[in-house]
Picture (cartoon, rainbow, N blue to C red):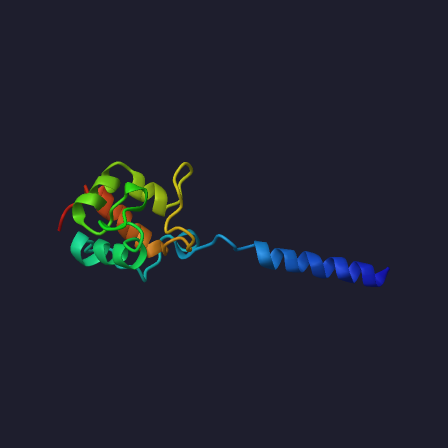
Length: 124
């Protein structure tokens, strides 16, 4: 009986270890982190490099998966202004989670995208 209880206890501990934080990311855990500098968010210096790193491989003018283009201002501002950019990167219900097959963007990056969108998605 003692071996059975020990085995069950071990399985419970393992199940908590593998399920407790599977969807956590920096933004969810530390939404107001002091390590994120979002004081000067611009399209050219902040947003475009994020798109290069995370989006343009599938959403460029040459490979516009889902008819979404993120490698130029016009394409990106369109989805920023219609809510699709934020819905996808924030993984809101009803939107395809992006980047596809990858972890959710870091909280700092999400905050910068949100700040840019809230500023009217300027071409700066």
